[in-house]
Amino acid sequence: LFLLDHYALDPMGGGSPLPSYTRENLLPALAKIPHAFTLIGYVDNAPVALANCFQSFSTFKCKPIVNIHDFVVLGAFRGEGISRLMLSKVEEIAKARGCCKITLEVLEGNRSAKSAYVKFGFGGYELDPAAGKALFWEKML
Image 1 (tube, rainbow, N blue to C red):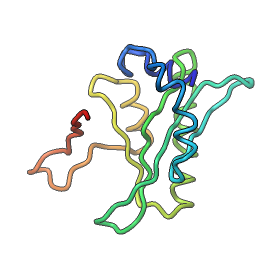
Image 2 (image 1 turned 60 degrees about the vertical axis):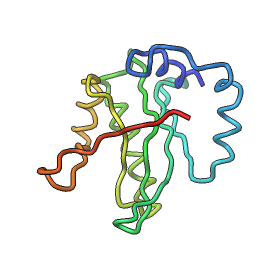
Image 3 (image 1 turned 90 degrees about the vertical axis):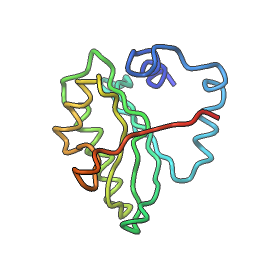
Image 4 (image 1 turned 90 degrees about the horizontal axis):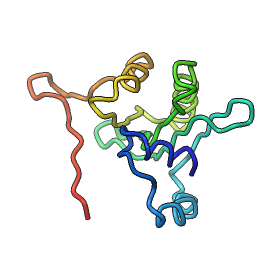
């Protein structure tokens, strides 16, 4: 929870701490989701990076996909190649599961994350340049 709360407190994560409900219920809730997996990166036995991932499915490819739902590297450890190591491990797991791709969302203004993702081979999703890039939308319930 420490790493996820650090992410939530960052302006790129919303700038607010995790709600008490989330703190109390997240770990048992994630444990019940069979297609979820979490990676934690350590430096000198201290947690410094987190990737919360969920396996989903591509109907067009008829193969599974992995979505990186949360991804954070503590500020003091950015630029050290940790994101590359974490993304490499996610990719290794995705390949072992027969996935056709890895997806994630990133805020337009998150330059450092975008740079890391582009270096790793991620890019904006589009089927046809004339139709434009896909947008991530939500409806709160």
